[in-house]
Length: 201
Image (cartoon, rainbow, N blue to C red; front, side):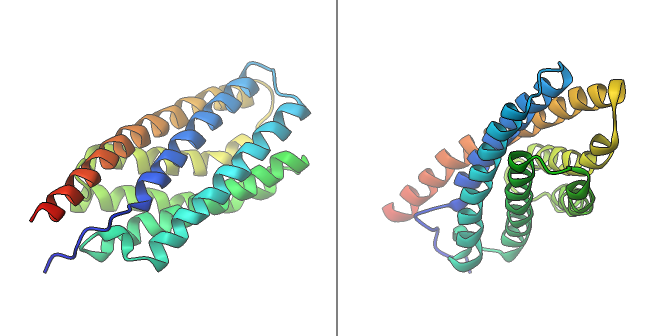
């Protein structure tokens, strides 16, 4: 039996925050790639990432303790809930590390391991045709996973290698942001339309 659709969908909020984080991350890595990174810039982006991660935790709590965002089957909550929890945690930690000037190499190891879960999520999306746009959702999860795993070589790189990885990372995060934007904007309208249809019955 299909469950009633929730009047509020925290996934839209989460996808908006993923879009903002992707854009911010791409801009930050562009500054790194072009040699414009400064201590002040790190602090500014650190505060931004921390704030985005903190608000993402709110969406994560809603997914776990609410009515699962109105979805009729549990695998969506598993897919989005787990990923949102990991995303929020890494954003908060990344913000803290950047703001305080800590060595990112210590954060890169857990980030790379957590990225494997995101890559597995991408596989699940493709294998089971999850969401209304599986190909776009797959790209979103794949880009997020690659970005997380990519923190490890980036944190240990120097010179030209660091510059090239920064450019590559900026591109990956830009793709992630575009996929999140497309998914989020469509989900925003689509969920409103579904609620209206439910109420009209």
